[in-house]
Length: 236
Ligand code: HEM
Image (cartoon, rainbow, N blue to C red):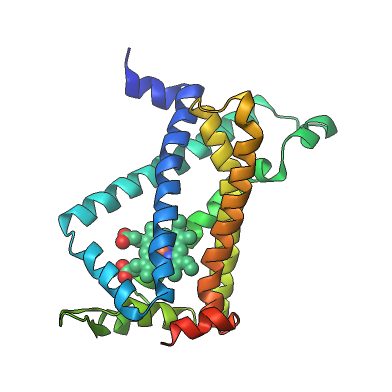
């Protein structure tokens, strides 16, 4: 059997690819959030972390390449499955189905596309630093004397703008909503869901997604000074 062929050409193979790439992207999103929360510690922490990642050198580029490949496959297969579903169901579902499918599951393609646009914007904002090339020049001296890029100042300056922060908060909200259905669907497709713990899984997905949204949103909100306790942590 030609495995790559059947993965890319059968519906079940495509669903499996979606779940697998979704799992990788979910892992990245969680790890990235944990890394970003170091912004609430003294600047040494997140700047040291940024330096550690950069010092992976070629390894970092391999990880980036792998994540990019997962994102491309995830979006490409999602668009194909959406088109196939539409073609198989030219008439919109009636009231009965709509009651069973959650809103999150019905707007997966739309939330996914907004998140994709957000990621492109985010890369231009913080990684390419298109609007603020001076962020590449900001440096910070670590306790051991090493000069590194000042990620802490970049994040604080980046979120000082209200429209930029508002867009981030909206995007992480939609990403959390996308994940609220995605996590359950991923577990089901990978064959790990069973009757016994369905409600536990749904509960986990709900708690995870709320936590994911609130913790991500806390960063721009704290920079804007709207969360006094956390805002004080940013100015130590
Ligand atoms: C408030 C929330 C966020 C903050 C503060 C933040 C911050 C950052 C920072 C500082 C960088 C590194 C830029 C550099 O190279 O110096 C970065 C990169 C990146 N972020 Fe975020 N981010 C946030 C949310 C997200 C979300 C929700 C996603 C999508 C899941 C995301 C995806 C990425 C990606 C793909 C990169 C590029 C990683 C790389 O190639 O090194 N970020 N982010």
